[in-house]
Length: 353
Image (cartoon, rainbow, N blue to C red; front, side, top):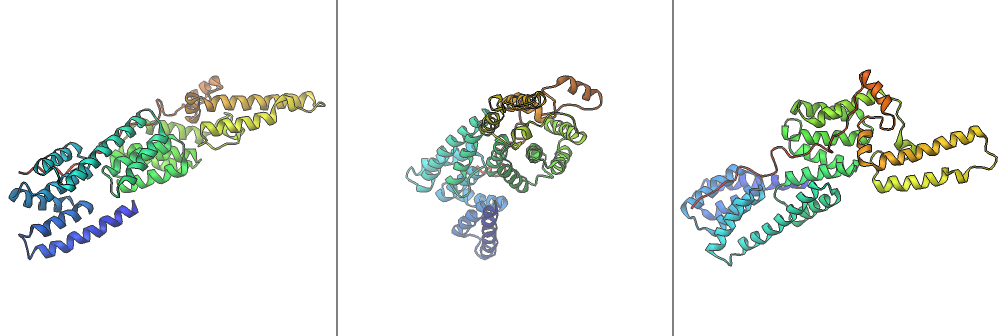
């Protein structure tokens, strides 16, 4: 993101310099084409629009202008319009290198994006992360950068990867003015979820409050509010993560490994021969807790409910807590989904000639 901002800043300076030059050579198509190039990378839509209109109204078949128009549309995620411009360019000159390259890149981008969407729908978070990274590595300034970052934030949260998730979600929120943009409510919720995994309740509460200000009907906000309330009040639930000696961000593989190690050490076969009845009862209770912890945390639904504040193993106690003001939370059905506003770009809708 910092590299993108630097590149945009450099090209915006290019736009400013060329604006002064063009003021003394208003009819120079070559200078305007160079300014369009800088405007696209510098995200100066107004300048690009102005120059594209100037050129394409006078010369609808200017191949370089048509290619730049297609490139601008693609960069902003207006894929259908970009495709139409590329086809028009290739109909004018099937061998025009810039449009042929755009055509090839667009097909590759669409294929990769379709795979990422499928992985998101199926909650295959490792595949989502790989797809996003492949997209970002494919070119210096990929289209729909905001959508790629949204997918990355959600995927790291789904993977319970605290450090990478916080970095990705924070980068997205900084890029999209997260505290003022209603479309970012879900991603404040994702970051709050990561803060809770990291036992940073205060920061989680701040993000939940910000998300609520942006969208007070967001289901994920209400769930997190209940969860934080449960944590603030405290309850007598067993700490399954502590029992297995793992972090809240532990993966299924890490849970299984921790369980095997600790269960082997605490197995009744390893009790000393001269163990007292009282000590045996205590060790039996510890071994039962270890198995219970594994059962709860290896079951996706039970783990979600447990993380949401429920006392899954003791529903009667949970019922009594609710009558005293406690209410279980969690993320029913998983993480809050959807990308309000989508990832498509608007603004570059040039149709001239």
